[in-house]
View 1 (cartoon, rainbow, N blue to C red):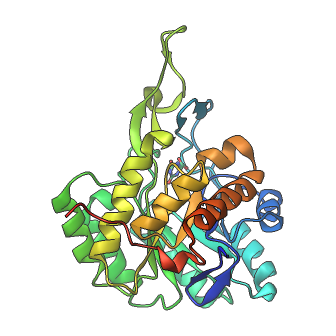
View 2 (cartoon, rainbow, N blue to C red):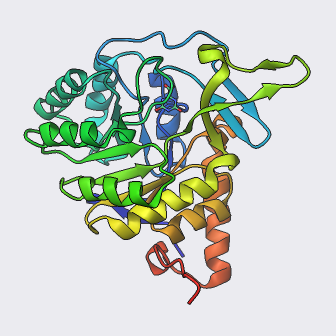
Length: 311
Ligand SMILES: O=C1NC(=O)NC(C(=O)O)N1
């Protein structure tokens, strides 16, 4: 009985990763992920230059999840490139690199740097940060998404995935999947946080995060049904060579099992990792293994994507 997972030519002990942005800002945090039982891990989305991000408070955990309006604080592209290059000699493909440019030019510049570097790992292009004031979630602009991918794939030849926002409309699933299918993407990662939600402290009669009058991205249990729907919608629409990473509402082995049933290959944990720390990977892996054992599944391949409709 094994959680062993094949993804983009590498074998991972299990499909579990952190979600970009959680526990991955500093080298120290990345090294802790490296030492953890996570199958793989990913850096905080990098911008070309270091960013302060939004004013605090900007992250607030709540019973059923979290709300955040971080605003892409990060140490800058070179910091994370240095880290992944120093780790390159391990050759295990366990670290993924996330980029989130403020513009097309930013994204092209960072991806040119990565293309010209000795980095051989996976890169995730974040098209869905909801928290930079004045900046749209690019994934909701289908023409802009197509333009970025058209320009990127003229030169970028290494494995590249995209982090997508949640979609809520069947025609949107059809349209964006039709665009994504035109490109040699390694994967889509569904979903980023559900953007611009509001959480209220009723005692104080006040919002709980400072930026944008309290509007922030929601994660955790709140978003699992939407995350599962997005994983499934893309799994059934995309070319089979484009894999799906499932992110959103994974707090237990059962949630992980559900994402795998929908068709996910790798699974990313954000809010629950923030709450529990890296032991969350051991617990979720163990709970997933128990579910597989109870159902007689010897490998994830036996049930990945096999969610049944009602005939
Ligand atoms: O893509 C992102 N999603 C989020 O929910 N928050 C972060 C951020 O605000 O930096 N970025």
